Image 1 (cartoon, rainbow, N blue to C red):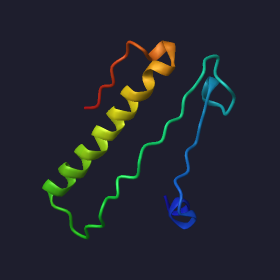
Image 2 (cartoon, helix red, strand yellow):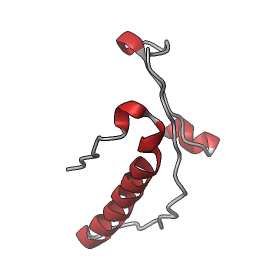
Image 3 (spheres, rainbow, N blue to C red):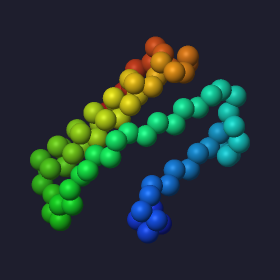
Length: 82
């Protein structure tokens, strides 16, 4: 997280077969959503946390539903976030 903050960009580590950085046998799709623009709240309340967590979860679900049709093995899958 410190490196990401210093660079001003989020870093994502990709892994494939056998948890190594080699390609898998099937196509992967990487999708990025819109920035959520979350405010800095020095001492967030539980209501603040719930509000922004719900916003994040809804964006993840939107991305999943928007892109799952592009990969045949995901067309009929449902995203479950507990």
